[in-house]
Length: 289
Image 1 (tube, rainbow, N blue to C red):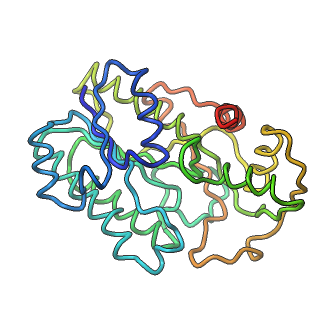
Image 2: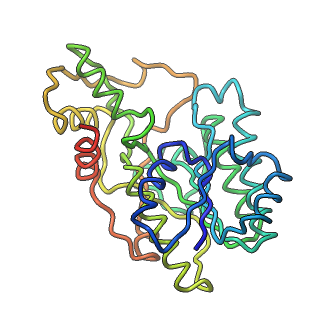
Image 3: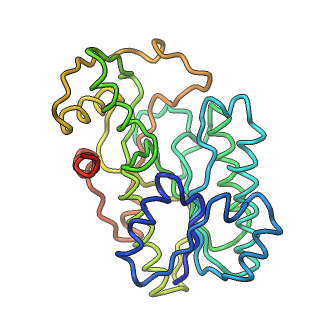
């Protein structure tokens, strides 16, 4: 099947590029803003007419959480309007659509892992524009899937894992927030899950389970716990890490204090087996080293 990957220069898109050679059953079309402007409906119509992808995976997003507070229009253009454009292009061409969203659509006040039909209540411009993007896909009436994920990291790009390794080597002490709880997600695991869904779609096109799904690695951690594991699994880092409250690191955009995602629906629907976050972190750090 021909699969269009938007935002292919990011963490998740880069993982798809690396998995391309392991996935001969699909033909990937990798694009970023230089190759395809998804905020331009005319450009999308021309591209779809030429390439006719069977599936679109939208990895493109405005992810500068704090900057989005000052640039809500720009964040909305990419996180909401571009999703609407892609959904309309998919409707016109008959393509299926998988859109990657975020745990930031929730306010973080839950006491148990979020399920897909829990009320959304974003507390930041980033979360709000991502929520609006989900709505655009669902309202389009196409065969589409929203996959919410959390705390994404990879061996590609800039992310928390790489930052903590660098700071751990540079400093004797680090203060890391302990009162924000979620689940780290290895982008490679998410890419593999999307490919597994694509395989099922290719084998049975009529049986496309549209709707919202949650995907992260298994397990739970705070940013403090995550940092300790990063240093432990990397080795050779002699840095003391101290847990502190979020008030020690004030940010323009509030962060959800609890954003653990329940993965039961995606596992049962698509037969996925998801590794624990420490297992996947070890794999990523081994690759980085």
